Image: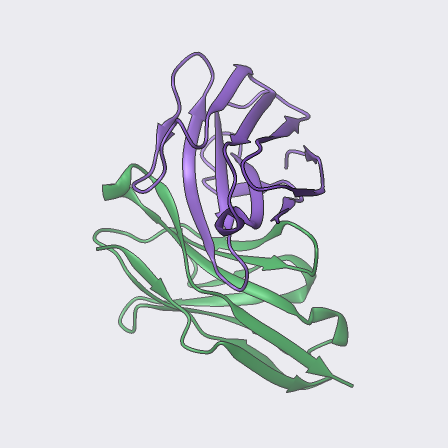
Length: 114
Length: 115
């Protein structure tokens, strides 16, 4: 079955430090991978995607993610965290053997402290 | 990216009643999706709504409980029928990106509380 795992329910980072939010996936075929962010009382905002090409993809708000096929991972990173980055982050993958549906991970709460 | 609005943004409803949630997009889109996000949980796809055809429901969701309309390429509604407290969730609509961009764009969500 196609799936996405975010092994950490919560990540705590000091402002100015680098942050990593982890994601691993299990799909058959080439994975199409996404990161979304959800701020309190708001919908999901698209951050970035990997479809093909360069393994390092850059997205909104200074975030980037690295696709690693051998480790089946797509970790979200930012060199210097901001307090305003505190939010809920979701990794997702398109499942082509389930009609192209978007499968979400369970989410990781990122808390950036001043 | 598309701009998506939802109405209402939140509501408190009594058990046994129904609520219809509206989703409006600022451009024509082929596919619209409805998701449920239960408290502290991830997103679960309820159904896919294509204009001019019946919605396709995911396992565990049925049309009698979650009827969907898709009258044109910019609008859809989801009704939560005969509500119970277990229906308390955030309901989100989304649309696919244009062309072959694959990502989905989400509305702000409707926060439903059933008492």
